[in-house]
Length: 572
Ligand code: ISL
Ligand code: CA
Image (cartoon, rainbow, N blue to C red; front, top):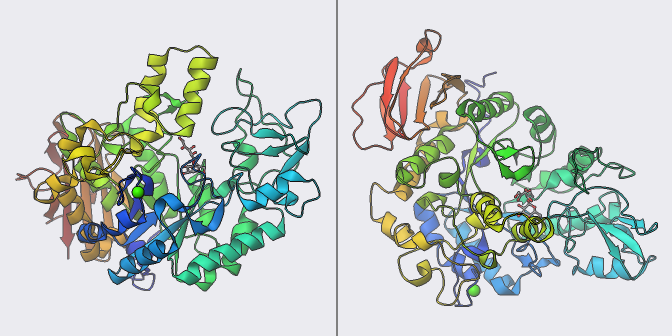
């Protein structure tokens, strides 16, 4: 499908934007308590403007007891004291708007904190008007109401002693799930969303939004293996009423504002995605897919790391690129606060650190969709390897380690190895601003240790180096503004079966963009097939590359150095 000729009618700011995710706890500390905060972000707005980003996505800053770093909200209309206050927030919002940037808030409405007023009232009495804001089941002989496993280990059920009933929590027990079947809950949430939008925020990233509708009756999940609790995704992801709720939310809230929405949706395929982001669906603008993030997960889930082939990686990307083209819109992301650092995961954070970080950036910024850059990615921040479990902070990581090592008796070195590769704290070490103590993040003791490589990898060092990763990101972001083909062009993959090279062409009206990426640490020569050769644009000029000397023209066979990336452009 193509939109050639009509793309100018379909122009929208959020398709043309580059988003930058800030994880506030780890971005910049302004007052020396070791915790990043709103004033810290404000002090770095000029940096973000210099980088060229359009939208800042702020991970949660609402009041929270922080069992899951703000993803457990106790008051949706207040700012977490550690981060500042509402005045600071307003100042951040106006600081962004003055610089022509927008603010996207994180919206966490699958669950609240157990310290939220609603839950405090709900838990004490069965006849509380708030009881039905959450999901309860009677205690029958001390047996869990069903066999679902929580994302963070154990059962999804916790017994509330005061009333002798269980409540449901897909995540930590301090994160009780809201009962979306209750229209009052939905009203409260819509009212809260309008309140933030009326304040001037420009959009929402919706946390696990496809988990809000659970299968009625909450039946047992199918048995898939020896463990006590089973993965119940098929019974609560993309559940029976999820589209009804999102359409209602759209009608009641979203449609009345000029905003940007992104749903975090686990286990969604491209065809299911079209039900959320299809242009005629009246739901969301885009979603975060997990197929790429799950590529290295084995049968045992995320911690059971498996190898992957480039052809699998490319086929995931290509399916999303082609199935959504002209029908919906893609988001593009390679890491976030829940995922390992992209250069360590899909690149090479040793010998070809800069080359591979830039190669991955080239892919991110030249595919079809809206790119999301996670803080620190733009300087090639890497995974961290803490030697002791005590240095980790993430609830998911700590729960998993305890279960594996303490309960199941697994070797602790082996568990740490998996954590070094997959743990969420890889993404949560403080942003490395300069080579002074604590990487310039804090004058105090950071809440989580700084990655020990901050003297080599930091913003200050890279800003002044024209060949640095950060300056490469800056150029890529700028290209997007100058060449509509990058935003609106269609997509064709070349050399599909090649296990070393990812190559694709984008077309829009008379323009073509050709991206070729070497995903390996070896030099490699690709010979395009007779079928592919006619797809290679003629008379092309090199637009950007991660190697300084590129003297080759675009031809039917090309030699690429380790992790080399090139983008060519032709226009008639
Ligand atoms: O982090 C994950 C894998 O390590 C995911 O399973 C993650 O829990 C899932 O993507 C949902 O994430 C979101 O909701 C969670 C929160 O902990 C995450 O930080 C958030 O991005 C609960 O609110
Ligand atoms: Ca602080």
